[in-house]
Length: 634
Image 1: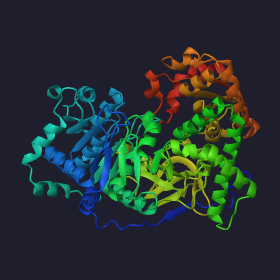
Image 2 (image 1 turned 90 degrees about the vertical axis):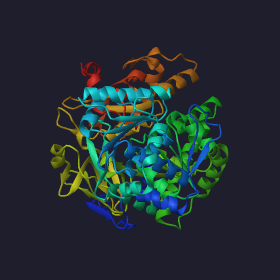
Image 3 (image 1 turned 180 degrees about the horizontal axis):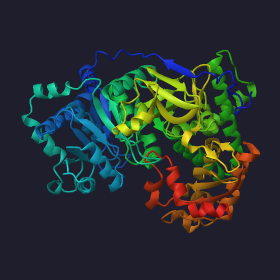
Image 4 (image 1 turned 60 degrees about the vertical axis):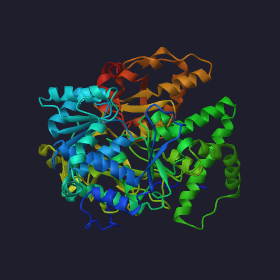
């Protein structure tokens, strides 16, 4: 068996390709706009269960209510009639600010049925950011998840110098006190709107009209409004559904806990609606593990940190039972088995060595089967996105029987641009372009994108000239293509470090290696215009506290403090020093980290430094920690 770390290292010949394209699988010319996806599904299978919901405050283990496609379409139409009756015209913008929930889906499709352009915003957005979105988008209507959010919309509109939009609250504490009205009020207002008037409005938009404006979450600066057309959404939804028929099925179900403000969560929801896959929503990602056993999904979209926590929890459980050496062996065998399965994808005649087969069967009874049960027992595939997934972690999960599809995309590509395919999954690669899309590698290694998913440009025309080159969108990511057209990401163009000695360093490989440690939430390599490299490690406070308690030690107060406290603990320092030594060993000596510090991000500062999709706002953290960084170079 080849070393998994080296088994699939691309050769120079494999990485010489500069462009890859995948033709579309679906002709979308006969589709009017996004609303046709729901209308067609409701006509075909009105009684099929589309959603599972629970009452606010209900326990995860309480019975979930099932909602058919016909019932969902009926709620969408009723809400759309209300919007039309309230004065929303075709082309007006409708704001949605709420946590991930069923009513979000109703509001989204209802606004599109009414001919409006949907503008989602994070419910954690600070007022200044929300005011900027309102000033740019100028919404005439808004859906708010709670009364508190409705009040914030009014305040942000005032800060933007605009009259507040008409606001409809999902779950007001007091119906009479709701700002603007409730969803029931909206439904009642629409009773005068005829079916013919609604159908005329629903079918008015064309594929080339703007369906939504999505404001980027701002990891590197001020959010930008990305204009996404009906063609972008329809093309992506239908082509991705066709490319993953064995994943997105009528018999399958998923749990959506990504923010629906994020284009990936929203696109996945539309894919499920169009293909009949059942959806349950969770507003709190911390509820996911418990919900897995209750809802037993067949497919799940996750970020790498969720997978790291699942593996870390299993390691901690093994440690409590004094089985750490056995668990470590089980991890190695799972990774080797995952590596073998990759080999078998390329050569169906490949067979595992006898010893590996026996070890895998043993550990499947001891560990792997239990892990699958914790995840609900029915997951056929996971999709990992939003951040880099360690190849070893991808092989581990495939080795235990839960293969991971790695994908890559941006808001500007309307969710995934590339993705691995079942039967051709390679850890560390984010796959080939999805049907209808193309990827090109520029002379400086930047990933360029074109195709059905690429957006129509930003709302600020001043940004568009620099965003495109020769008709391709500039992603800002660095990568390479192998001979099969599969993309491997190597870093961010604007994250490159140039030291004072003139050495150019891409920080992502080192950071990703450190972030694989269960105690580390984020790692930041520092060194621009400095003589050597240093690092800031952001601890996973919950994992670090649990690790210390497991050793019989008291966690330092900094792990639960507000702000951005430094953490000093001999045990944690020794544990992570070993991880840094290992990461340094994998890079040239000139790229070794010389000094480092541990910090925690307090709950009161989470929104300042981490996006709703768990990406680190790198520059914001560096700016806030300037005194600490200066100390590392003193």
